[in-house]
Length: 184
Image (cartoon, rainbow, N blue to C red; front, side, top):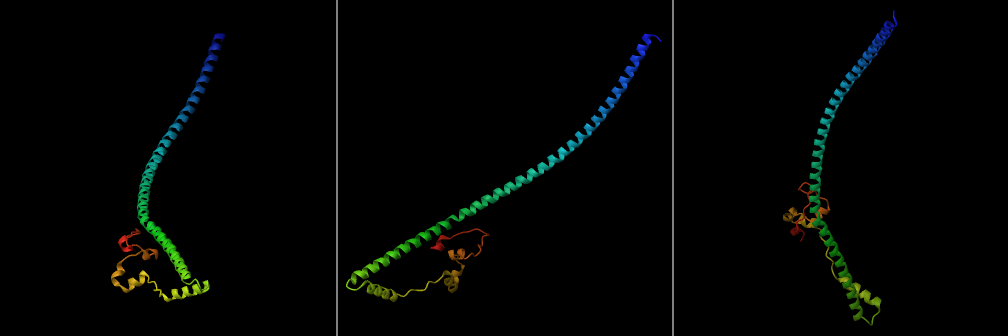
């Protein structure tokens, strides 16, 4: 064999080895591409399922938000109906305070008038005389609304502030209403 034939044989052998390595590499790349294709297919299926779940969840959340908005609006409306009640309670407190001030003033005037009329007597005698005069006045016992309602069947149907304070349930499913004509 000549040197040219040996060189050609070495070149052919090297080329055969190169073809074997290239074919093995291409087979591995084919397997990788097949696995990649399966992974992408599974990923697409998973993304479809997640998208459907998110769509259902967003519909449920939207419904829940609508219901909570309705609830908040209803609550605000019912709280708005309680404003007159608290105004009335504030007015009652003011009236009681004014009555207390008037009573103090009347008592003070009464005692000072008694002292002026009885300057010759001692202050203790004046106080005793004033207390005797106060004891002469009969104090009428206070009658509660419930006693009046029990005596008069026609008035039993009327709702009053006492029934609200005593905690009787409303006939309007939780709504609070105050009839100002009845309160007067």
